[in-house]
Image 1 (cartoon, rainbow, N blue to C red):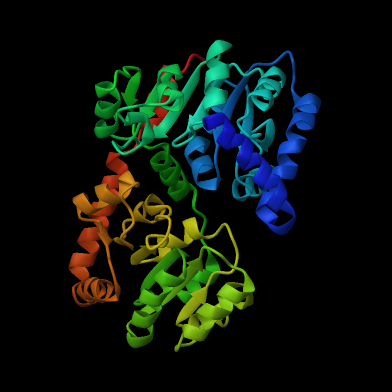
Image 2 (image 1 turned 30 degrees about the horizontal axis):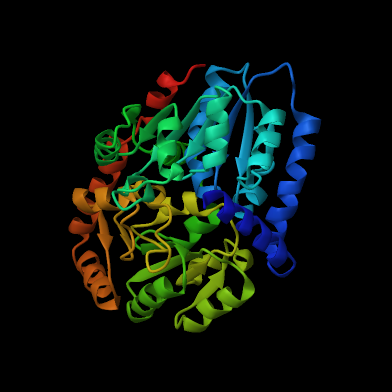
Length: 406
C-alpha cells in the first residue's frame, strides 16, 4: 500500500504541475537531481547527506552542517529538500557542496539516487520517514540518523497492527529525540537506539541572536518608550486578533511580518489597519518614526526584528501549526500563539515555564494583552522565563555530534 500511494502521489503531482507553481518547481527539480549528482559528485570524497523537508527543517539541520564543516572539513555536504519553499530559498547555501531535490520514494528512484550519491551517512530531520530510502540505505550499510525527532502514541508506527512502514523504525541507526516522552515511547516498542538530545533549532536561534546585526530603520521606528508588539509569520486568523487590539490601543506599536507577502495579502492587512502604517520597502529612517505600524514585506529580517520587540506573537496556530517560537523567545520576550501547538514541544515547554501563552480566540488574546499592557513587571518576568527556557534547552548539536561516526 505504501509503494502504491507513493506512485500515485508522483503521478498526481505530474498531472497537477502545470497548474501549481510549487508542484511544477518540485517535479522539474526532481528530474534535475540525477543530472546534478552526475555532474557534481566527487567520487574521491565522502559525503554527509542531510535531508530536510522544507525551510524549517533546514534550520534544524543547519547547526549540524556548520559543526561538520568546522570540525570535520574533509567531508562534503549533500543537502536535499522535498519542498520548493526550502530548496528555492537555500539552493545556494554556501556550506553545502551539492543542493538538490529528493526524488519521490519509489524503489527505482531511490536506487538511482543512492547509486549516484553513495553517502557516508544520512541524517534526516524530525519527521522525514521515507520507507524505501531508509530500507535501501539499511541494505547498503549506510547509517541513517533521525535528529530533532518527536514521537506521539497516535502515529501509525505504534498501532497494534503495524505495516512495513511502521517496522522501518528498526532500520534507523539511531534516533536523537527532543524529549523524554519520545524516548520512552520508542523504547516501549522495542526501539533502543535512542538518545534524548533536544532540538537543534534551539542552538540555531541562539547563534542567530548572537550574530544579529542592528537594523537602523527598525530602531528609528521602535523609539525609546514605545511598547513594540512583533507578530511573525502571521496568517489572516492571527491578524484578526492582534490588528483589532492594535487599532484600539494607542499605547503600542506593531511590526507585522506575514507568512505570505504577496500583494493581495499585504493589501488585506493594510485595509484592516486604522492607525498610521507603512510597508518596510517604502520606509526610510526619516519617515519610520512617524508610523504606528510597520509591515515587513521582505524575507530574511524577522529573526533580527524580534530583538526590538517587547511582546511576540507567532502565527500559524489557527492553521497547520505554529511557526518558529524559539526565534522570538531567545530575545527574552513573552510569546503568544494560537491553539494548535500539540506537535510542537517548545510550545508546551514555554507554557510550562511561564514564557508562552496559547490563546483560543480574541477574548483570550485581549485578556492576556491587557495584563501585559497594564503590568509591565509581569511582562518582563514572562520574557525572562522564556529566555531561560531557551538557554536551558541548548546543546543538542554537541550531543549529536559526539555520536556520529565522523
